[in-house]
Length: 146
Image (cartoon, rainbow, N blue to C red):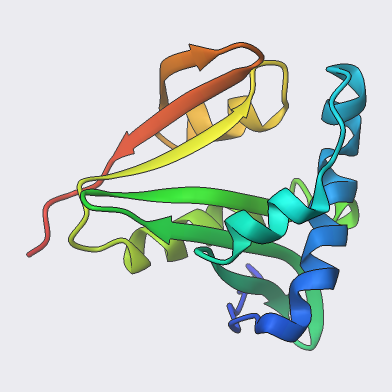
């Protein structure tokens, strides 16, 4: 039986916990590429981001954050806690985001070129559309609104 995620919205009081979750999830990449995490910059970007917890029952297992743009929805964050990775929950989160993005033409995301997430996004229908240093820009078309 597949366990179904719920997606309760995060509120402004959750921003410190979200910053910590994302910082910890990205630490390996930032260290490998000699980058420094900037919580102030994260909070500025977060002001325009809609965050939802990835939750199983009462347990928070990750976070998703997105920003609707003119024709696309930008997936700013998708992170599962390590113990919950590899169980199909990321695919459930993307399916939910596709529903939220109805009426837009595509999903966009950026990831490190050497991230395990790259394979996940490719399997989920994304393709690489640009490279900016160590980051790749990916896009996935969405079906037209009915």
